[in-house]
Image (tube, rainbow, N blue to C red; front, side, top):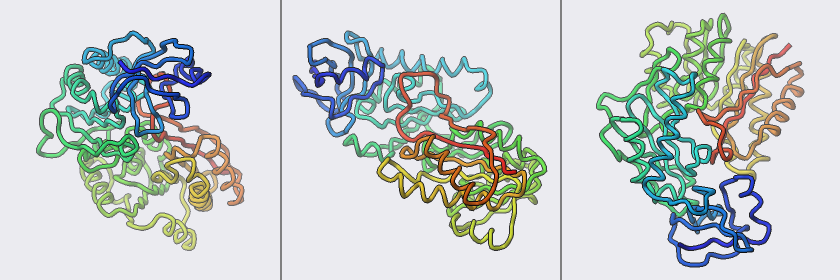
Length: 396
């Protein structure tokens, strides 16, 4: 087995159990290894520390599978790891009865580059690293064994695969998708899940608890949901007794899906729902010019800053939408605002929102911090990729 030799002092992050080894920490590779092959990580002094997956195309040159330098990284290893991840979710009381659940969350489950989301009897798998891609068959077999699912659909079409030198891959890797489409019930509301063409793995599981909170806060309020996508926040607001819900998105197909989702829930009052296809930034300005006001506003935009290099431009965009959000609130109104940008940290996001409130001339206080990652346990490190940050602010 090839050995990845670290530069002097670069083993410190591994002692803290961080599973990433960046290119700048690598002195050399002794031996030959193809992308995804397992290598032994060794200090400059020759001490073996871990077993990791080699990825020569990525700035993250290796991702640790095990901090036991003698561990066998084989089919049995992945079946055990997958089974343990699934079992962890089974033990979480809050997930009982949920039809949409994240089963594997990358590094948090000791499986870098592996995401697996369950929607009813279908599991959607996303493999984003060279190591995960190499062990596809073992991971799929582990999921089938641990879940008994009828189908596994692969959605390995994330842009991050390109950084690993991998081509996109999609399609069924086990069983077949249900012919009539796929729906789940989330906190009493039925929703479509488009595992083939929807964002991420077909649904935004990370917002499940925040959608529920929106419903709990919506009773009797006039609600504005911006970047509404397929209407998750909108439907929970209606279920919670909102007086009205205006939902805005620039995507016609997304709004069509949202309206189908509303039709799936005959218990909800369609007369309280209004759908508007428009650029959200322009729509917010128009609503301000019209003198419209709302009691609860949800801002859940797409990723503005994929990396720290985009943070400055993204900060301006976040500032703009939050500024308009505060200006459109009635006294006592609540702004629920989110960022999924990896380049915008929680502290910076809070500063942006505070600056927007100040510029809007409102007295706002944080009533909830809404940072979340879908169903991820205490693990080795923050999961790979974007993570959700959010604040619920009430104005005086």
